[in-house]
Length: 233
Ligand code: DC
Image 1 (cartoon, rainbow, N blue to C red):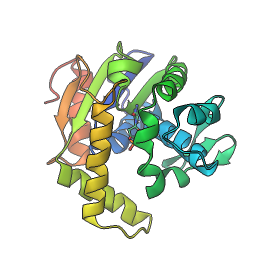
Image 2 (cartoon, protein in one colour):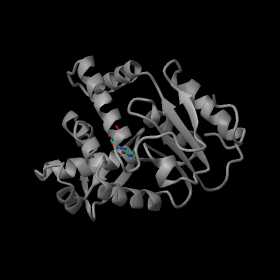
Image 3 (cartoon, rainbow, N blue to C red):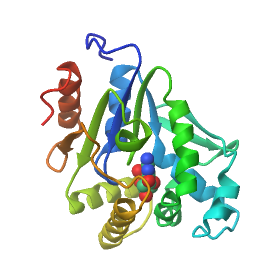
Image 4 (cartoon, helix red, strand yellow):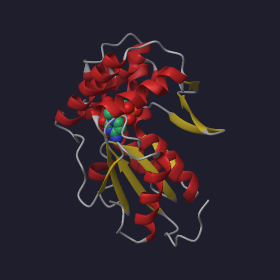
């Protein structure tokens, strides 16, 4: 853990970007380095999606999903080097990463009323302490006044290969074309929705992670934090 960075006692670091740009890995590493709490907001939209699907709700029916999501309890529990996702008391860590959830989550995340519920929760979760929050609209909408903002990007094929490797670790058989299609479809839905689309927030530092390894991206982020605003690109 780095403690000579002279960062404030409390801060929000927003990390946004498309699927496979490296947000989750970097958010995890950065939060460990800084002794900060990491909040994976994609896992929250995935949780709402999984809960709706498990109740046989048509995810295109916004109000039915809202009904099921109001009062949803999502808790992140550190467990070794992962975070368990506990939804309404049950362990949803694996469920929310299943391809059927991944293929529907952008539909749920496009519902304005669901975004309102999640945004409210995220603001509460990020209200105190040192927070690294990753998602699509953290710097632009959830915490527009975040002390530090990063926007990670990478080539489509690089992102698909990363997703493929992650899925491989979970023992799933899927082709690279399928993963690429899924990523592009989600990019489209995430970028074209009306409420809080995926955009680079004002003041965000963009890092293209296509040709960088995790340590290289991490050190650019830390350089930026330590220089109080310079040296990331
Ligand atoms: O990062 P991820 O793949 O786990 O995100 C899952 C979905 O949730 C993805 O379609 C984008 C959406 N999302 C969002 O709209 N806003 C966020 N802050 C985080 C994720």
